Length: 200
Length: 215
Image 1 (cartoon, rainbow over the protein chains, first blue to last red):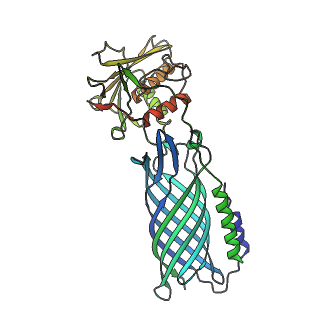
Image 2: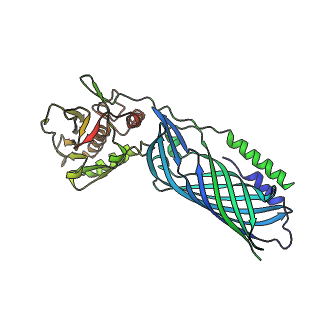
Image 3: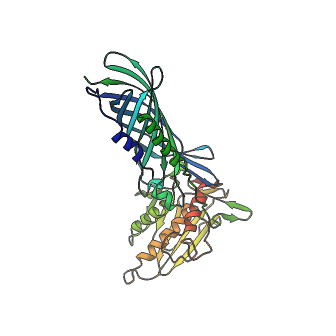
């Protein structure tokens, strides 16, 4: 289990909020792709992979130092869970939702680009609690990074194109009972478009 | 300063994550499930398009509950949606018919009968390979019969185990296993699926089938 302690410590001890700090709310809509959650071998290679998921991203941030903001990020996306066998489509086994909640730090990189780093939790929700989810649906620690391109639209509004990457470990009680050892490293990549609004 | 700490923290997290590697199970041991007829080796599993399998069960001696228990038990051995079944009220649309009766004489020579004997009851499943041998005639017929008077003897465990065993045949396990530890042994002693039963069911579901269901 990965602990969010190091970055949480940074967040807790490393900043002081400047006077007149402005809260910025950002909302983005996009898609998230994921690597395989499960890889198995029964005569041929079997992979269980979420399809591209329409995803909503929401973020609330405050400045915590010069050129540094801290934020609480939420996201939710849902898509079908596809099975491939020997590279061939083997149908889907229901849908899978992924909800994330993260604490993030962000700051300017170059030109109009901002970087962001985050740690948090990812909670899956399966439409069918059978098969790999028969014994329960996992919650996993999440590590993320991102890049935002920002275009000021007005005094308080900013357009954003954001790219997100995150990494977590996936396993379920059903997989462990079936003899799987360890956890699968799952990478997710998201691309989204939206806007940010600075509260007066 | 904070940025450096954040980068260090995230690097540590990334390093910890990258140390993990999943390993898939071996899926052995298992036993032979295929039906050999002369020189043909026949393998069957339900195609995805046929799921869920529709099962009609004679409403006698609590048999629908025993069959439902068997469906749930077999379904729990699969990880990737290979099998699902539902009880239906219309026997005319069923893929599998379960009767609480003695199996009648076989209708044709191309019907293979898998017979099992349990302490208190017996079961049979007919596998009709049609003339081509590469088709499985629907509905598959399954019989469960008490050997003692159910009014005086509690046969519920016997019915449960026999239904579980016969459902295993309907999955595509067209043989009996060689170990009394397995539910698919010829005279099963229960109580549930062995690791070999589970591995065999998973294997047959991913082995290329050369039989297709037909009506």
